Length: 124
Image (cartoon, rainbow, N blue to C red; front, top):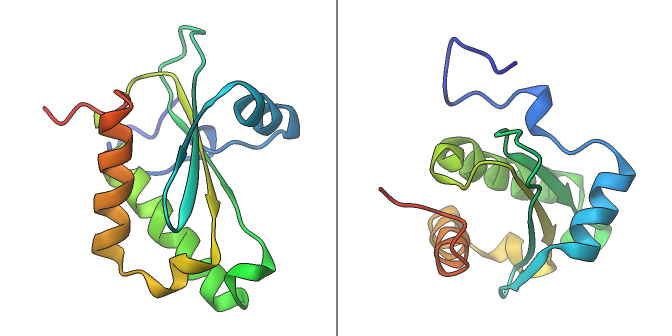
């Protein structure tokens, strides 16, 4: 059950945890490539409306501070826009080293534009 105090929370159920879930999204999901992040999106079709997020990063992205900053930015984009995403989505962001050189506004604009063009984001 989602946290009812705020529609903009980011709770435990909205995170991908299991390796099998990650593998399923990476194998069967739609891949969207940008300059600084690869996005994999899978519509689960399991009547569960929770949208879930997974993040994958490597040390190529930078030190721990840079990796965590990039992950926080992507979690924030997901958290503030999840209500506009198609229900039942699993999304994985695989970060590239270029993300540390990209500002938050550009990251947000690019990610949302990619999800809109793939018809997973409804800006109404």
